[in-house]
Length: 200
Ligand code: MG
Image (cartoon, rainbow, N blue to C red; front, side):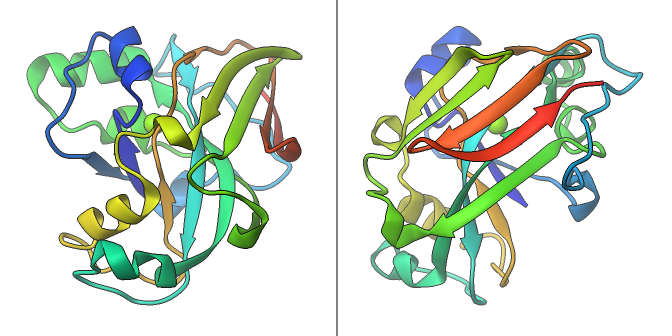
């Protein structure tokens, strides 16, 4: 999984981060995927786990140095997920200029919900939402992305060979926040329920 940070201006502001010159990129291993139907268990090393709802793109063939113009040929499914983040651990890593993996790539940190054919959607104007305990907490639209899906594919493929089955997490909009035991998170993409997660 290839993840993008700081791709929505209002989210950059809420965490008081700098607006990046290029996409911020990090990885999650496949062991980070939260198995389907499992609850998310708050890990013992953090007191401040945040949800981040994100649009997902599933890569359908191998590619390297993909130009933005041809990027659309490398995916045909769009989904929704959560990039769970140990914000307290991340803050320590950021302070020291250390890598983020302990905060972002731990077991269960990647919720990968349903995927849908990309033709279902207008990818430039795609609405997606997250509710926590039935309250709307994140209300995003891909039209607010600093780098669009095709630009992200082009950018990350300059560094990493993309392979069939790779998933790109495209960054979170504003509204991130903490989860506690018994919270229920539901993600929808254009009104379709893509995942439903209980926190333990
Ligand atoms: Mg994120």
